[in-house]
Image (cartoon, rainbow, N blue to C red; front, side):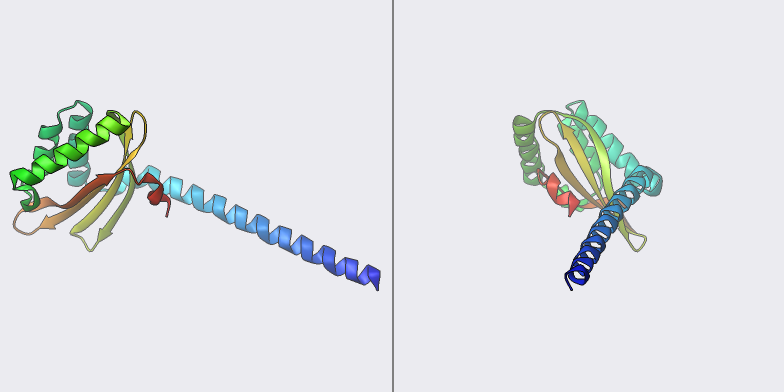
Length: 161
């Protein structure tokens, strides 16, 4: 009877261990898939959008902050007011004081709804801490490619969710 009980316990342990390893392997495979997707993002993102992001971050890295936002929002109705432009520049200034200058950036994720609505998350590589930048582009029938939503913060950990 004891041998039978031990056999069952050993079988359960082996099954549990096998299942645990399968889950770990599944997680590793998912990480590999995500890494491959991330590496191919630059090929997937439409050139007009990737160009706007490149121009924006190249200006930020050069410390041409006002010009960066003027170029990004050039034909967008959401940044027509001087107060909104001032607020976003103040937010960037506080970010730089806390986390250091933006030295580079990495595209983190890309999503599209239909053909006209695109969202891109970018990791801003600042000296002390990374920041999360969210860009939502709309391909307007009358205005062309415009920013319809923009924000940045220090919630980079949320990008893993």
